[in-house]
Image 1: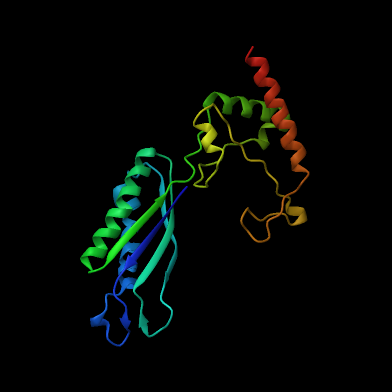
Image 2: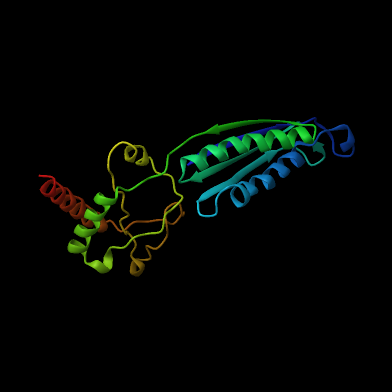
Length: 209
């Protein structure tokens, strides 16, 4: 999960005389649209990637063309090669578009969490223990997510398995996902998680002998 910020520098002026200015808002808008082609036209369709602009800010009044605009967003990928490509191309697109429209763009790209990767053998062990402990109907594989997770740093160095613990309870109205303002968790699920982690640790130690 990476973040980027593009600052577009133009020339400020009065909205009634746009010919005397270089409107950074228009330039930023072109950059936002161009960024959508990175995934659709430059990334292998069999790969996964997300480029989202979540913030676009500029100006202080309705009748003034500002001298700069900023846009910020996030990048999510699984492949290190795709990550490198998108990082490079965001800067290239922003700079090229700005230059072609008589403006200037500065790009800052910050790398965050890498992709989280579960070790196949350890994951199989967790699934086996989970089905024995909780029943096969309560253990299933989820589709890959584009969420960021700092545990991914550990997964780059040692075998790991990250699993999700269900904490919903529809009968009590506990149904909202994380980041939702009404999110809540059924705390009874914590005991289930503790049992599972303890059982996995014991099984791992037994099989590692």
